[in-house]
Length: 607
Image 1 (cartoon, helix red, strand yellow):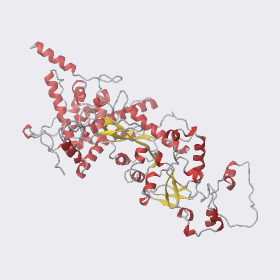
Image 2 (cartoon, rainbow, N blue to C red):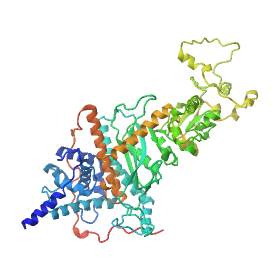
Image 3 (tube, helix red, strand yellow):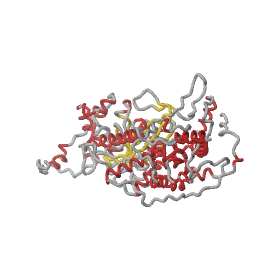
């Protein structure tokens, strides 16, 4: 008997958690309370309690305890696995923290007690994933391809999409909780609202579908994620990240300390390449509810290629300016709007020289990225600047802007005989000009008409000027209005952006924001918290993967906030004002005889 008890205690000690390097080996009650308060402020445990109320079967561990264990595991071990969660809950917490979580005060001593405790936690996590899954199936073995296709199709019908978006918003609520904490304590006052949007691969342990056996993957909604410039795909999911970023002033060197923590301000996990633009909009819509400022949204060519109604139009209506990049075949002249040429995303004078219009046509990506090494391209990009339409009024509540001819207004950037004929600036007086030019005043010298480029009109227009009603609206009107949806004009709605492509302002906007995206990917996929390692989140299914990745990103956000605060002020993130009480009291569990006899839900009927 003594030998058996000693063997059980040895097996129990082997199941204790492995704390990641650099973290404390004993979890203080104050940190548990901080993470619990963070979790409760997200509202996710309370919503899961409401969804699970009245469902048959043994309750297992409460959702609040399950999520708290997984969050503690992600924060202290870098892994969001149920195994690590129950090890922390039963071996690393003090008596007070156990009381907050409703965990028995006695530490399991035998392997049998450890297995029973772990099963209760697994059962609690299984109930959460079941209630959130649009079509729950048995994820322990591979399914025939036709059966798996029926389950996957259930995610795309209206009811399935509604359940999937509810899951995504719940996961995003977890990610945004540290952001709300930073906002409440004034740590985001230095952020101007610039956001970088990008997707990254989330690999899974499961193998893809097999053509030999005609069986599907256990991850029925996973797919192949292809990173930019790579022909080799990664099987799993895509996570769309929105990152708090900022522009630089043209010429400002990088490396300046940030006045805010560069946190992830949105996360949506989904099947790769299916709803790329829509997922980014979901993240930005959830961010808009916090009342934070809106600045520039920078996105790569994967988002430029989306349908305008799925990305560009709703993002503009949220109040964001767009900074985009283009594929080789999309550069140069892209369309027109009321007579103005759409050149690399900006509306320009109808008579912009052809050499300037097609300056970027035929160039590969390397030539565009290293524009400073091509003096001819640099000069032509600079020569475009005076010919772009000028902003007369910024975006309104509907995302519409007003632009005017570059020769109009009190500070024209070009000379245009057509504009002077239709809308003369001053009454014409015969004789030479009487103005005296002060060559020592550089500002007045630059504003003189002789210092501005002149629009070259067609030769026949000089001899026989056409009537005003035959000219394009951009020339004859004082300004033109461009709605967010461009009134159905696909090219204008899709390619128009608010910074002139490859200009100094575009470079100082697009590249820093994009580098912030890469920075957050590197930090979240680093050695301490590697969300790209599928062994750190081993549960199967899109529901489980969404929750586990969200909890890991939440832990990463809190780590970013704590690091920024310590580097900036030398102080720690205090627990002042945190309340450790449980907002939802424990509900009595249903009797065990109500356990369902089947496993999962039946597959949806075939079409």
